Image 1 (cartoon, rainbow, N blue to C red):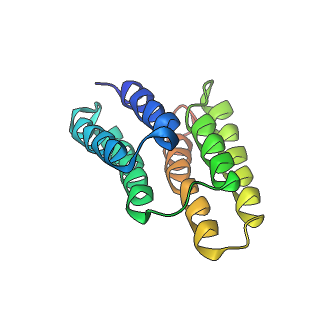
Image 2 (tube, rainbow, N blue to C red):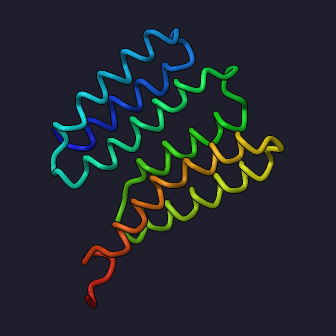
Length: 141
């Protein structure tokens, strides 16, 4: 399966996560985890695994419902990682998304939640690095 197919499945689980009980969400996380080895090309598996692990960490926390700040950061994260366009446009979108998530985190007083929000930038940073080091983004290489 290609990464986009996995990402679409992940997005569906993420969108429905608030309405799921913890047992249902746990089974969805395990279903996604089982899909990771099927992602092709193999280089995209680490990105898929990171997303599943982040969702699993949220499940393990068993904290109160997601705050408005976290929900906003997750929306920015999803929109940013799904950005379309040329390498240059996607790089710009990733940088803007990382900056926006940082601004959202700055509005949160609670340290743990601020760190959780900032952790959303990790996968975006990985995508940014991959794009910036690709021949399409740097034709002089």
